[in-house]
Structure formats: structure tokens, C-alpha cells
Length: 92
Image (cartoon, rainbow, N blue to C red; front, top):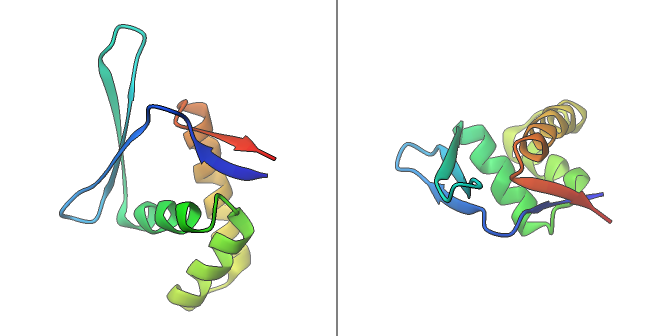
């Protein structure tokens, strides 16, 4: 399953490399979530690879010189957090 941001999610990459995702709540206020620079890299890989988690993990593992299995596990945990926060969803 591929990861897709939900409509209305705003994205900023901050000067320190962190990722900020924003989503309006039911009262029209914006909820902001800030993530580490590693999550920024994961977000970029997911977006460039059409939400394909396996391909993103492989790409990041090559760049970081590490095991893709470990990256995929970290990526899956983070994607679950994004889905729980209402920032993303899994789609076919």
C-alpha cells in the first residue's frame, strides 16, 4: 500500500531541516506537527516515489549506507503516526 498525504495538508521544510506538517482542525485552526530532519528525508523519498514505502526505504538505505529492513521498520512506524494524526492515509 502506498502512503498519500490527505488533502489540505500543508508542508514546510524549515531552515534546520525539520519537517512541519499542518492540517486544519474542525474549528478552522491549523494543527502543526514537527518532525526531525530524518523524517524530512523520508517524506521527500515517499513523495518522489509515489508513496511506495519499500522503494523509499531502499533509496534511503543506499544514501545512508544502512540496512533497508531497519529503515523500512522506522518508516512504517512513522507512517502509522502520520495516519493516526490524520495527515496521511494508505491507499492501493
